[in-house]
Image 1 (tube, rainbow over the protein chains, first blue to last red):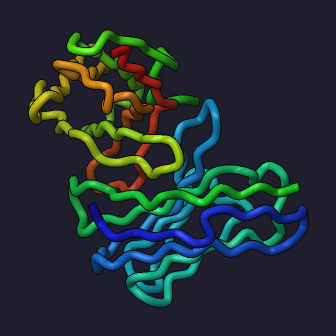
Image 2 (image 1 turned 30 degrees about the vertical axis):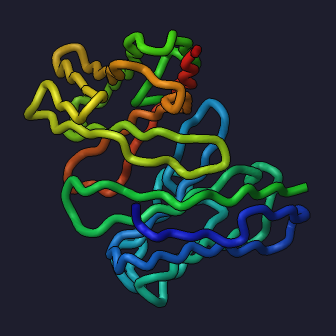
Length: 113
Length: 112
């Protein structure tokens, strides 16, 4: 498995506060992804990156921004957290274009009160 | 609009028997399919995949079958073991598109 870590693993915050989640991978993978997992929805793509400083939106990107200044780090920011953003967030990475597998991190459980 | 559907939220199977997990999709543009397994408090881990040019792919105890005309795929686990108890997600993508579309998952419980 790819070495992917996420921090923090758990966070409780209040509505309206900014939150940043970090994903770090040690495999030099080019592609990185942020997903959220909610009951009844499976995993849904928020944003992804196809290289340093190259990012694009997924299907549920409203309220989220991302940044990738280094190959190994992909940050997800909630500019002003809302209760609807309470979820489990997973980061994933993939080596190259094509049919290669995405490898997932352990997840961050975020609660917005 | 759920383009990838796993209609069985849960499944219980006796240890040693066959587990069959099903997945249906609606988008005919999907041409690559994956199964992921997820334990509680962990991220999903890749299990097996299949390209649309094949109708079967096998890896040890795990076999995935694809029926393109029915837009249906299934994962067979034989024989089922207690460590197979987990949530299984099927996912689909269009080659060249970064987006993986996931189903809602099926919780498999193997009964000793």
